Length: 501
Ligand code: SF4
Ligand code: SF4
Image (cartoon, rainbow, N blue to C red; front, side):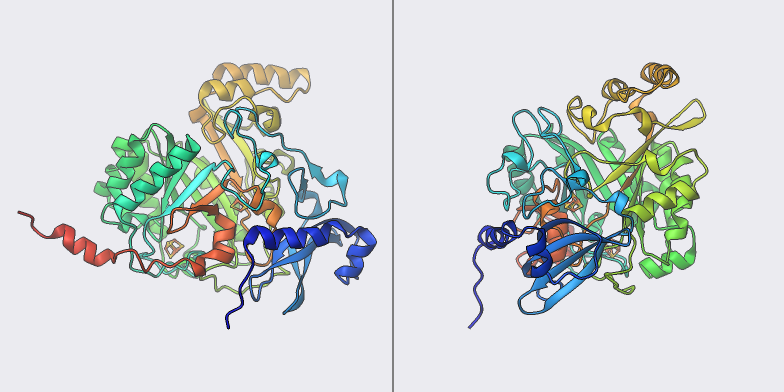
């Protein structure tokens, strides 16, 4: 007889109840912890074998951060969380266990009228914090097809299907979201390769027509947009559009290792195509330790050389989906490795201290640094901005306009030189001059932390239209979410192509 599980909220509350009773000595005994320096917190994670929620403890050992978790069926397992303890924080929003290291707690305000909108706080106001539906979604990903024209070794979605989300379903899901959330900062049309969808352009046009949708992100491997005529079809949507181009490094070897294909020339053509139309781009670099981490600086430099490239996103791989370049949960790339690679590999003046946690969901979910490129100069401005106080002054975190940007420059009071620089910045800088390096360390079944999941603001719509944490979906839910009810991509294409009377 199949085992029935109690509902998620109940399962989590049961574990939480146990964790709250454990003080430090009891927690050490409960988790049979032997080698550690400092206990940081208890939380809830996943058993990497059966994906059941399990109690976990986070601690430092030899300057690195680790998680040990206990599954009733599969025993204890210890996983790496962060290679440098200085880059790991607790949050005031952590709720699933006990915090043991108060000096590690980073306090993020419940942004009043900021990123969450008026009267719409973060998880703190949400009584049932197993439920993310009240969370703000800074980004909503919609996978409109599970088909792709590549077969990447690092594909977190394991895209190999042949189905498509019908246009009517897509419109219904987006309309429902707008009704509930009022404003959608950004919607990502993704897959698979979203542009393979026969009604892809109708979807883009629909999003563009929604006043409540502020940005449309188009992640792509670039193959389709290397055709200049197809790239030109983005032009009518330019004011809201950003193309997120998969861009893993310089060499053909890297491309082959990560993508099972050589896409290096295709990527350059895509950058050129969108440059001609002034369409903003992000280069998205997926990073595997020992494969392409030495190429991080080259990718950032590539971004800085093109005025229409506004963001380079660095994403250490997660062991999800089709990832098959060797899974080692105790030796892997973490956020601090990305920061250090940027600081040592790029020639522009920037240091480790210029990176800060994005003050939104959780301090371990994303770090950022900002440059301004103006009048032929490139300067890092992260040190002139107090991001936390800025959050209360900007209406949409992902969409600083020129006025908002100028209002936060100089909000970090320093010496006179800084103040003069800030004054100049306020006069001169336009939002289009800003270039960001964003580091997004997504989680998998090994480094999974329910505290981050519950505060998540980076959501993916499942096939039923429910917004779930991107990390939770990939680590736990994707295999349970079937595309069977959606039509075949090919049949639909043939139907559309058939003559009508
Ligand atoms: S990673 Fe992207 S391009 Fe590669 S197979 Fe998956 S969906 Fe396709
Ligand atoms: S998707 Fe993952 S990394 Fe991003 S905000 Fe959500 S929990 Fe954090």
